[in-house]
Image (cartoon, rainbow over all chains, first blue to last red; front, side):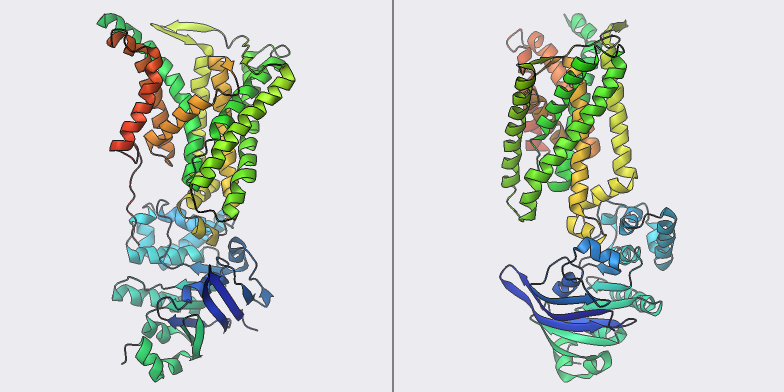
Length: 237
Length: 320
């Protein structure tokens, strides 16, 4: 059974038909990437899964159960973490408070503290900055914080939206290494990226999204080898 | 003449402090709601007024039974906080939440709703008081030891004034703790900064907004009870001017900023009392004490011109 399955999802923003019948699956233990141009509907797909937007029709099955009508704040408690586009750090909360609010649904203070330490081990930089306001962090640090914050509720499935956006190449490598490590330690990951090259390098499988429709899918290595993918998303090399 | 003016100063500052604490506590309700919803909840004046009315009623019925004024006051404060807090929650639930649920993006709509709620609450209280006591102008009847006083150096101090300062300080410290040190407080700040992302953390914004109204309303209720104890004459329209000034105080301190609301309230209280006392003398009687309100709003207008973010408000640099 797939951990996550989307069945013929149609999502609208007002009159704009953003997702036109998306069907995809993510199996436990996988890194699946969703690549595509700006405005193709990649973020909308993630937002539909995490309950931030409601699909007009279709089903989102998580562990076999339909969740497309469940409010976003309850989706989190089912084990889906979302690292949103643009990081969305709470700018006037400290790094530590950002992590604590990530564990909002946990009532065990000791557990929250443990998870915080795990985050600090993953990103020692965050420990150094723990008393600083989130809004004063650099882009890379904010990305680390967004990931650590999503990990606070120990999700099974991690939705990651453009983690490479606006980061220096060396940081992009570091973040993607971290994503791979998280996957090895048991997290299933659905990764949305404009940087298709690096996304296809670490993913097991991939989907190509074009103006709200999936046009290609398959093992990441096969996708990366396809001439049309190379031409459109890998800069023609 | 100067000596006479200076001799008055300690008393004026003390009186300004009392007024300032009342403003500060009302301002907190404005600023908390604004911080979370960017809504100027004009009905908050009436939440404060309801607290004042509860204060008068508690004294009316309990003072003859319980001989100790402090005990009655504590009961009045608790009841005032509960009734005003719950009222604020009900207003949010009935008037503001439906607008949010419809996704109303026009900020004017909830503002006009707030003004409407304000009128409804005024006349609701007038109706209730009219049926209950055949009159809507209420007089606070204090009992010992609240009505006692003493003179410290040159300052005439009533016991009830000391209690007002003490309770205000406790409330302000308590609120600071709640907002900055508790889980609920962190959630309130998170919702205020980014409601959608807060949902991704498992926070239901409606619950947090409701609690915010409860807390702000309870503070307004406490301020109302203390106001009634201090200034005695109450009617359903008594919230308007203090409410407007507390709103001024909130803007003065930087709306959305909790410390700012406290500072703004205290500053405005001082300005107003100083102006009320010294304006007649300094202008040779041309401008009387009644111009103190003009001073309060003049400050607001000047501030909006030169420092729209308020005294403590800051333009936070946010990296994307």
